[in-house]
Length: 213
Ligand code: NAI
Image 1 (spheres, rainbow, N blue to C red):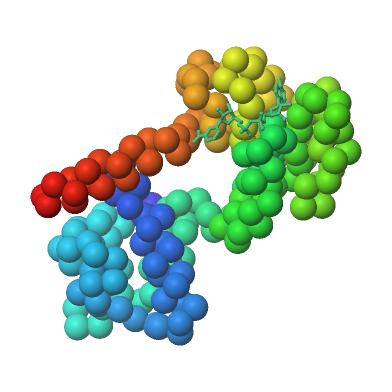
Image 2: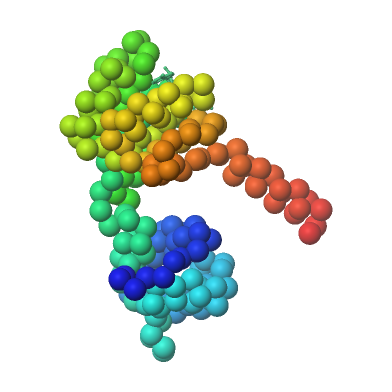
């Protein structure tokens, strides 16, 4: 990967999907696949697949196709999920608890280490074996456990303030569900999640299909 050129954001956005499909192929004991077969499975053109994967020096071989496990591992490395990322969840409400309850993030290397809230009524409440801790413990916890990512599932009016606290304590990245900009230093990585945008995309597709387009 040393001579890696700059990969466009559009390609990076497609990689998790490749990764997921390749993971399914591995589970079904498929060892190699052509870009044509992968294309039929993923409903992406074969030339798009070749172009995307050529960004990484092209893992395919003429007449052989792609070695599924190798490609899977390489994409995993590019996405940085070949190693563990420690994560805490801040806000143990509906969404925070749903994330904690979804055990499969750990399979992708995202390991939840703790759950925090500022509502004393939730202190000690167990969510999938995690006891909800209070916010006065969060800074020490981040330092002691070298937490890399904080997921913010809290109301937007407190998100900036809480974001600053976790960043001060050493968090490097924020998975932000609160619908607001966090205004953090530039070296802090922020991934904003908006499920409603995904739904709007869905509604657009429904509307276009209804019109027979
Ligand atoms: P909720 O009200 O069930 O949970 C919010 C939790 O945050 C509560 O337990 C509350 O005690 C805690 N909290 C409030 N202030 C805090 C602070 N200063 N420090 C620590 N914890 C604090 O709300 P829900 O439904 O779980 O939603 C959480 C957030 O996620 C909201 O901002 C909501 O708008 C957003 N959301 C975003 C979605 C997205 O796609 N981005 C989808 C669904 C919700």
